[in-house]
Length: 140
Image 1 (cartoon, helix red, strand yellow):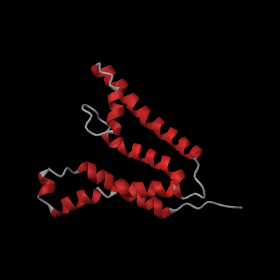
Image 2 (image 1 turned 180 degrees about the horizontal axis):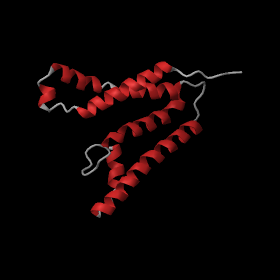
Image 3 (image 1 turned 60 degrees about the vertical axis):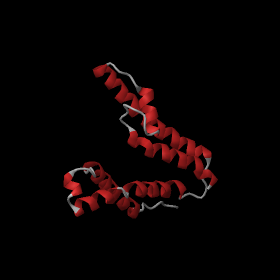
Image 4 (image 1 turned 30 degrees about the vertical axis):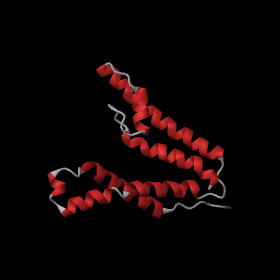
């Protein structure tokens, strides 16, 4: 019987990364409380480490297989797209109800590319980068 064991080290790394993301989003580098304190500045920049940590943790789970097929990658991409599109659609519907503006396509573009005006999900770039990694994974 082949049992899969959970890697608690990866779980701990993801918990630390979550805390770093919260730190990153709570502190702004231009705020006086950050600019005037070496501790807060260090805390802010430590938060930027969360992004590569999440990439490494995600890569561990994607690439830690004997073989990765395109079928596997496409299933994962489909699931990620479902989450991204659902959130963007829900946000666009709520915005339409309250502000009579339905800008789903702009929100979708803004989630993948920087510089799109009036978008709110620029931080979803991580999902698009993860999907690109999944497309490349079978080649690796």
